[in-house]
Amino acid sequence: MPAVETPQGIVLEPGRLAAALATAPDEDPCIRPIELRDRARAMAGTALASEDMTSVRHFAHGLEPWLVVRAGMDLSRLPPTPLDFPPVQNDAWWPLGWLTVGLMALAGARLVSYACENGGDAFVNLVARPEEDVGAGPAERSRKAMRGHTDGASFPFPSEFAAGDEVHSPAPDLLVLVGLRNPEGTPTRLAPVSLALKNLTDEELWAMEGPWFDIAPQATFDTDRVRVGAPILSRREPRHGLSMRFSHGRVAPSHGAPAAAGIALRRFKEALADLYVEVPIGPGDVCLIHNRQVIHGRAATGPGVGGTTRWLLRTYGWMDGTLGHRQPGGPPHCHR
Ligand SMILES: O=C(O)CCC(=O)C(=O)O
Ligand SMILES: [Fe+2]
Image (cartoon, rainbow, N blue to C red; front, side, top):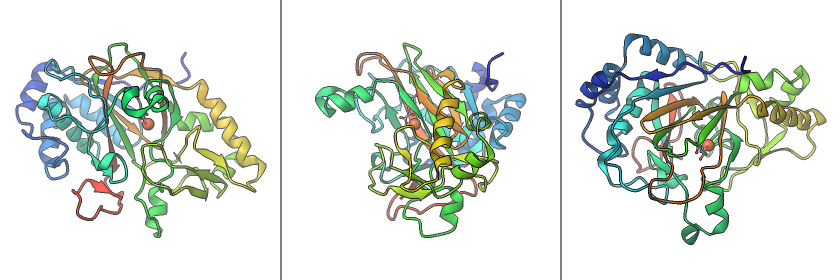
């Protein structure tokens, strides 16, 4: 038996999806994903069968760590895979973008972005970057396997934000990956935090909840604020018993931390290795992931840039009830 039970995905019925998409907004979903959320929610609701709604509700309540919705829509009009993060000016992906906004809304979430990441764009491209544009190191990093992490790990837990004095808004509650192309079937790797934590003693769990870790920002986040002397585990966040922020490369025990902190981090990393489930996000797939309950990474994407190489879109969500700092002068989805 596999160590991790893979959540049942949803496969949309083509006729039902086509009828739903006919009612989708006819504009770029990067511009008004908040203002048109109710319309997107109604549209996505008609694309789902009643048993699919049950799966979405289970996911929303935290009973499933992730949810893959396979829409299987026609993406034949897509342009070549872009070479950079900013969204392309091409409407071929818009219906899938609106379906994503709608599925997030059905799961009780709204789309958010951060002004300090990729200019606050609502959807960004995860693609291979050309060496001539970004240099050899970043080009290689954009294609190689990515070790497990949570996104925005240096940003606050919602409970920390609510306590005040935070410069940045809470990290994403949801990470949402949308498949446009994945010719090699490169898997995204997902591991439930709760299973990894089962390998830790009470003392190690206690250390993870203590002020014993330094967390550097993710490379894509343009901020120099390192979170110093902070917990990486919280049991005080809404909906979930356990909330983790983690990165193999960017989380380290603070100077003077008790030995249990370093041991806990090492044992957590070791436990993860056996827990990853490989989820290839294919064209037309929308994968909703609870960012603090699932550690995610991916396999190497293979050679080449542009053309028909792998192309995922990524967006973030906050569950209703999570609050942040609006970016002054920015659109309602954009925060600092
Ligand atoms: O490419 C993927 O499947 C995931 C990428 C990712 O986790 C990231 O860019 O932070
Ligand atoms: Fe990530």
